Image 1 (spheres, rainbow, N blue to C red):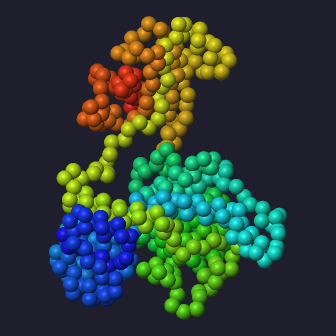
Image 2 (cartoon, rainbow, N blue to C red; image 1 turned 180 degrees about the vertical axis):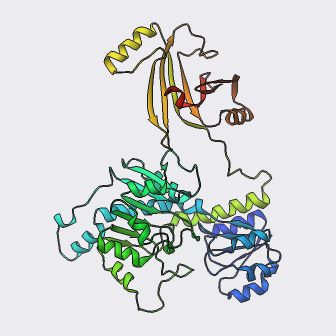
Length: 450
């Protein structure tokens, strides 16, 4: 395959493609029109954001098999038209998601603790401790809009900060162990810090405007590491002045050019931008959230890996629709010489709410639904743990028991017996390498509430 590289990237991108058998050519300076005149001679093109790949360009690219963008989104490409022409589109959000997550967290911590302001004051000989008293992230609700690669990375970074993390996304079922998916209304009701991780599209364009901002019940802080066009800067400034938005961390601005390489062609700044650059409660960075030494390597390697999977690998890696595995602990089961007496002890001394089966601990899953974990002592002569000879057995919660057991069989895992179904869910059993019997449970928690 003959591939044209029109933006400079990490060297491993070109070397990786060449190892696959591609013939790579570089052209970092020709105009778009000049590249259109020769693009028919290439099977693939790799870009960042140098120019738009529109219908005219695609019509000239008569042999193009893929367009790869070394970045998270595909906004510089006419996606619908390219797909209509049978061209594979490749992006690399996996490559810089960690960098974006770290940058978003770093910005809000810096803003909360007045680090930029304090640093500048000390350099001027000012030692103002009370004036720079910060606030803590702990106890706050972080709302994320757009829960894809970037949003998930940010939520993961928030683990350990003792915050509630919620998200809104147009796709259903994207919540995970790090974040609860909610409606937009609930997000606007609860959020203290809002972080945007939306792609560039019609839905996100000017999404954060006066009406959107005023729908939040509480004053909040804003983080934008997504696209500048998602925020109406004039409306943001108005909200900052009224204290509806308490502060803003902006890695992107709506004034950016397509290439993200510059803002203004002269020194005439819009009034809203002039306000931002003079505000102590605004932190700015030049679209560098995903722009780390490590992400440059990861982005390049991700493109190579995806080209490999599409055109060269005999066994392409399955990325989407992977069977979900264990989602939580469903039960702790163990042998006891006297289960009844032991349950009484736990009830008296540890306040276990025991019944004939043991004790049930209630909690909520990622979607806010009631879920439970069972604690149960069994008689010492029980055969329920067989063929394991151990004195304990764990029960793990799963979402698709049948699909998971089929997957485990393919992987050579020992599956015991057949699936059994009851009012409170489906059960299956496997053995681990040390002979421990594991019970897998696809639960119907509501059965325990009736």
